[in-house]
Amino acid sequence: MKRIFIALKIEPGDNFLRIMSSLKSLLGNERINWVDTANIHLTLAFLGDTDEEMIKVADLAVRQHCRGSGEFSFRLSGTGVFRNYRDPKVIWAGIEECPGLTRLNNLISTALSDAGFKLEERPFKPHITLGRIKFLKDSGALASAVERYNNTFFQEVAVYEVILFESILKPSGPVYKPLGKFILA
Image (tube, rainbow, N blue to C red; front, side, top):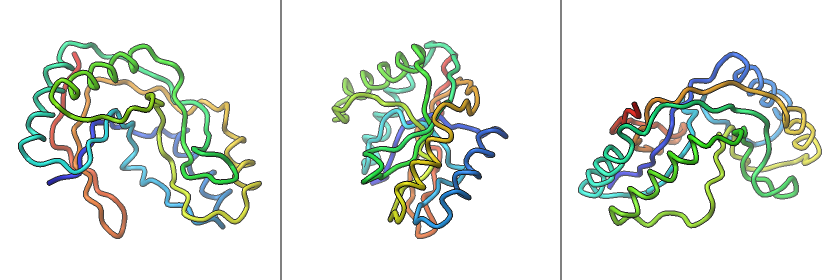
């Protein structure tokens, strides 16, 4: 069994790194597990613990559905939290509406459903997780820091491939190992 997910790898640019550094500094007194910048990604489907045979099925299904779907780009912009400022769980960077991203997510969801995978039923809310909040002392400081960047452009992201990752959980944080890459062109 391997813990797997399908995602887009994001290479953080200078502005992204500057904003993330600022958020870390502004929230330095809080218990937040910040995502390692080498692990920045946009999850398209989380499949969880999956046996080897089904990993092969997922690989083939996604590969076939993605081939020829076409490259596109999207814009990372704004910040927010999941849940709310009284009980926040995740600090995220937002993604401006992008028909190409919606279409790609629908292709992958269809491929996986047709292959027998049970997917989350909640609507697709594309975002980049920046940090997971473990314990918060000052919700006002969180709101102030997040709202500072809630209308800020991070970067443009070119999408030319989808990656099937294994997530290996370690005490120092997760390690994401690519198991398959699917070119969109």
